[in-house]
Length: 120
Image 1 (cartoon, rainbow, N blue to C red):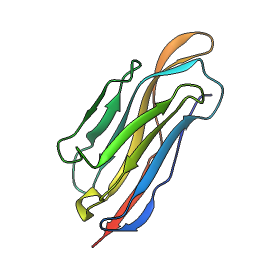
Image 2 (cartoon, rainbow, N blue to C red; image 1 turned 90 degrees about the vertical axis):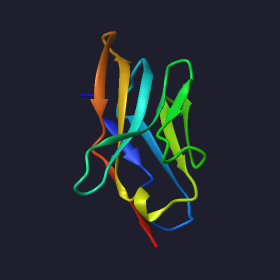
Image 3 (spheres, helix red, strand yellow; image 1 turned 135 degrees about the vertical axis):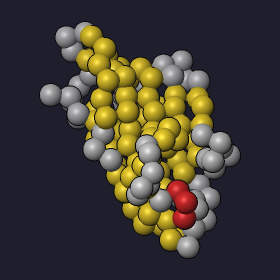
Image 4 (cartoon, rainbow, N blue to C red; image 1 turned 90 degrees about the horizontal axis):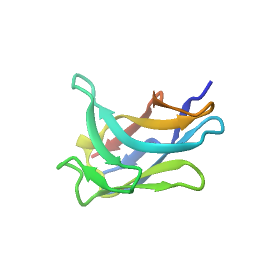
């Protein structure tokens, strides 16, 4: 069964950087559109950044200029580079991917989440 695996979360001081990565646990045909979401305690899950199959990106206003989403089509991975982190970036970060899997069909998956904590 295909699963999304996230990595790269952790604890960092304000102003620091972290890089999150997301990959499928088994062989897939390709990742189509993909997004990173986050959910802070007591708040709704929100979209942080997204990237289409063509490489077009969009970002939440709160992270523009600080976060960069990218993809490696050869490895079927998607990453989120987070710079100039702020305490308000503290949340569980989830990757969500629309993938083409075997036998060929499209399916939508969520990762289990990775904790990002930014200390002041």
